[in-house]
Image (tube, rainbow, N blue to C red; front, side):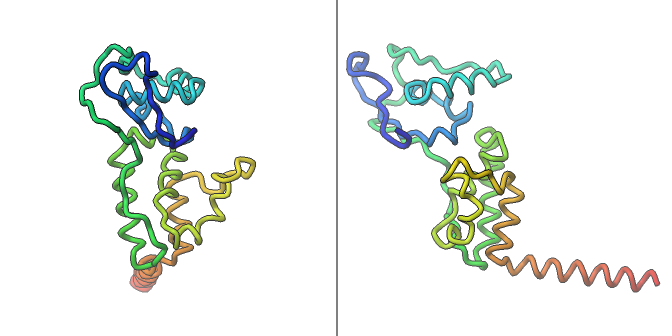
Length: 192
């Protein structure tokens, strides 16, 4: 049922307009996401009430939840509301695009602070931003997303970025290492 259009109101409860919501897969849900609007909360409850109750129970905040009363009119009557992950240019796996992709990815994640509350949510988002070329190079590290019985190999955003740089051979990484070795060598010679 993930990714399907959800009508959060049955036809009996519907007054004048219908909202179709395309939800993220449940493994990407977090409290700020499901409580973003009454429609999203209502759809989330219909899809996986157990997960919603777990997310609400694990919250230490006293955040006011949106009112999901079906009689409350929605502030903007759009015919379709699509809630998706933030847009980022997919990484194609080419070394010349790696630095800009990593910067874009880190900026996107830092800019959406609450949406990525855990390291694994950051890693999952980063994986979703890989294009076909990069997926071929990184897929073996993410078998756990396709087969839950396989333990996660990469569990932090930093680990993801390091693996990506290693597999996609960032030319800047070699340049930085060479520069660092030269600086260390110069310091050693100046001390002697």
